Image (cartoon, rainbow, N blue to C red):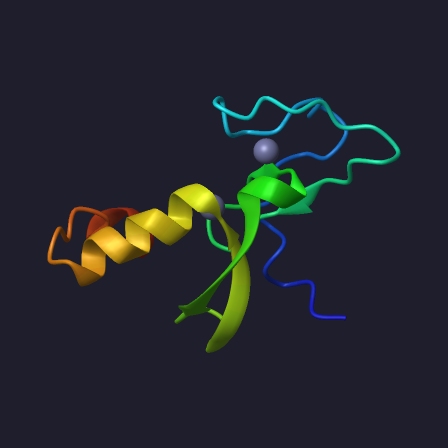
Length: 88
Ligand SMILES: [Zn+2]
Ligand SMILES: [Zn+2]
């Protein structure tokens, strides 16, 4: 188990709903929580599972919808997330 990347994860127990405000799904025993490997926040399956290559892990990981589209913006030349990544 590789645990060193879990330090920035959102606390599981406090989260009742998906972090995508447009989704707002409530978690229960059927709807499992998923941590975005990039921002560390918790999302439901619909808003998570996008694959990105993450430099900090040197491999492809599953991320949330926000991080995924943020990355696409970067590719498109809107490089406004650079500092945020460095701080992580
Ligand atoms: Zn994310
Ligand atoms: Zn969701």
